[in-house]
Image 1: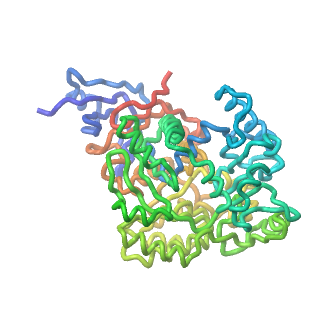
Image 2 (image 1 turned 60 degrees about the vertical axis):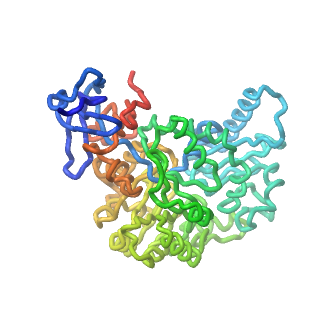
Image 3 (image 1 turned 120 degrees about the horizontal axis):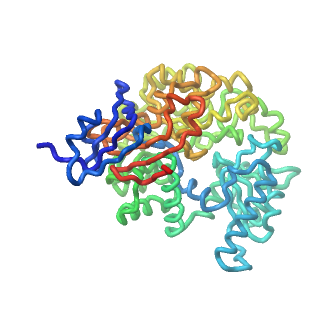
Length: 532
């Protein structure tokens, strides 16, 4: 006799997102796994004395979203500190930072905060402002002249710091990554100079726990049940494991360690896919280039606005961007990590950077079985699309970046209209047979926003169907993390990780970003309930 289910989710519009585009109306769960998917009548035979039936009222049930590229502590920071994504101007950013500083003083019960206490803001995007410019030292000095202040652009490759922070840390920053005007630092810093500030503000274990708790709640609110977290010189891995031991982790976390941890990862015996139910080792993460926002992504041809950028940067012509990790160093790293049976996840945004990463992967024995990944791949040439497909390398991309692909947007400014139309070629990659995984890079962490962007993308080569986009955020992301046997579709034998939507994205393709998450379920347990 078949054992009864623990839970039956019924009266639903279930989309398995499997190869057959299967649909159903009920799902039975036992011990955190799906045991049957079908019609309500069939599953009623699994309804025992202790079975809890959950009537979804006709809502849409999908596999839980897996965010294949995020920085969960940064998500937490935007929730705990000033969220500059809400700003619509430099003045608004200053006001949000000042309000945040006032809240900190009030919460601490003190009128004279320590001068070492940072005032922090995260997630500003100047490309959406009428006054489209980076925040500067002059702006942040209006927040405080005594306490260090830092405001991070949403791409995390650019930050602004005030005079107090510059005085303390500019000597540690690479000169070429500190922007100047008439020989004086403007407060705008990029790449390795930003790393100096990240190191200075790195939270201790208690603060990290606060950040990750907040980020987990936000992930659940957005229907995210699993993440691939990119971590560097962080206490996050230890805190994740402690959260799991405490029974407080309800998010499947795959940790991708930065390349400067490679020796430690190898020495401690960590290997890709080793770990527990909720915390597993992913791969080794590295940069190659920077970002379009900072004009540091590496291009084969100059930036469209390189001339004006050069005048703004005191004569330092950015031309085609810069290498954060040089190609020779990248190839050496790829060889070492691959030899240690570790997956590679390489950041590459510009077309020249993408080509160099693919060339490095092609030197390994079997990039397909290793599932090496290119993160972002925002500008990809025709030859690189073919190389992706031939090598089996995963394109780990962020559909929310298409918010910059509209006419007159950031891509137009940096790349010009022709290259803008060739950015984020998801349809071309998918048609060529490239494994496609969606993530957010926490800009923002909102899968439905990302799905909306690519379903409604301005160019055909960027545009996916609703089903294709949802698959990339579920089974595609699961594949990128070697998790397709347990996650990514609603099928018997898979983990009972679901997201339940208030409306169907197939019925409302023009408004997917405004569809509410009704329920998020992890291991069969409801971890978020947004129903009225």
